Length: 143
Image (tube, rainbow, N blue to C red; front, side, top):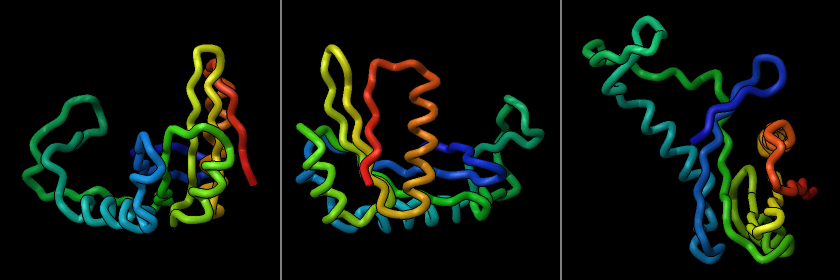
């Protein structure tokens, strides 16, 4: 899970299922990832930061995380040989964003294929953050 801010007041929680092999991804993983997070936050946290600082304390009050102002975005990230695999996965798997990664010593190629508006928004954020970090990676946004 990754929390990130978009334009204006839009916040996202990116929930990622990562696998080494695309065949190991379930077709309906997106709704299951989002459902898992929704179920998880129904339970009170075991520790909280009551003053918003760095000190955690036991959650004796049963405080629950309010994620109502986040967009939950499901994603799969998989090692791939090339762009074709990303397109095939996007056609078969029900998620907001498909990421294919092809590492190499010279430059790592990362293909992102959004399947929803929220997936597109997160892909754009990731493109910008990667450019800022000056990584040896080539990000390709597929449409």
